Length: 430
Image 1 (cartoon, helix red, strand yellow):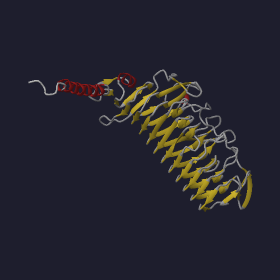
Image 2 (cartoon, helix red, strand yellow; image 1 turned 120 degrees about the horizontal axis):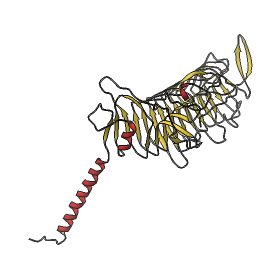
Image 3 (cartoon, helix red, strand yellow; image 1 turned 60 degrees about the vertical axis):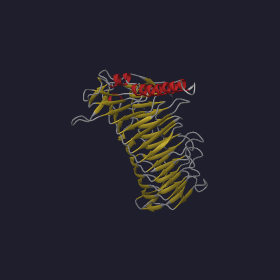
Image 4 (cartoon, helix red, strand yellow; image 1 turned 180 degrees about the vertical axis):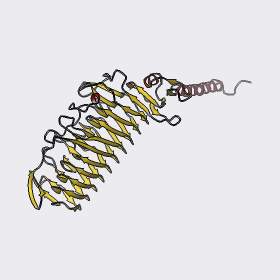
């Protein structure tokens, strides 16, 4: 019997065809992602090297890496992937090392155009997730160039979680070359990079621990442990634990950063957390970190008017500023609140006018300052910079709040002496 509606047959046929096509598309999408392994500790399809697995795996794939040493440079380009080390039996160490002949240049820095030898580079890709592995620069075989970087994100997004990055030191010998960084995020003009680094260990770097540079870079750091080399004698590199600079923005929260000290403060200064010409009024937050045993634990700095203002520094524990202040504010319009600052060689908080028309329009409130050699809070504007300083608590400081454009009052025996404030010469990585 013919259908009552002459169009019913073709419509039903078209409907079935559309459903079949949708199923085919879904199945093909599944086919274009995979879970594979590096090494033979699983029953998955496996590859001998990480790079082979990266090359062979379609976008969206998961690459599980068996415990062992992998002497190679890895590049993830224009692809979203998950790269994770896995436990097998009682082993849980996945270590990416330089190849036997050392590192070679494999990427170009987006700012300088100089060659970079990256151990693991993520380029024009994302999101890329990297977890539970170690990137070790031992045996890199490089001198002062090209720059050696452990993990490099370039125009890319992703997450680094529970990773150890260490020994990014040229040829394994600390030196005065301002190169050698553990984790680096950078962005070319008109591009973007959004990267989270969490619960990771970073240490034994020559220059910087974690760096985020350039407009378009948004860096979130949470729960990391970053340790410098302690006192680095001249002519070594002036280390910085964390750097957010040159237009970058981000959130720095719940990290522990210690031991960044340059041996000759007349030449350069090191910082645990350095914001150097960071993005203007971009809601950068530095909160609940533990920083110290360093030259200057937290530094907000600019050498360009109208850059780096509007940062929130909240709830940090700051101790042992060996040369300078616990928190140095050489920008404007910042909020410094609820911090505990102990044992600073100069002041607990310095509203610093030495970067030009800086140290102004800041709010400093609710901080606890114990044992600083100069003052609890030093206001270079001497009350003329519209700073709001209220409800701070002081213990065993020579002066609670003083204003001076050139000198600190310090204790020498039982006498109070004035000394010239030291000039900070930060050395950001670029």
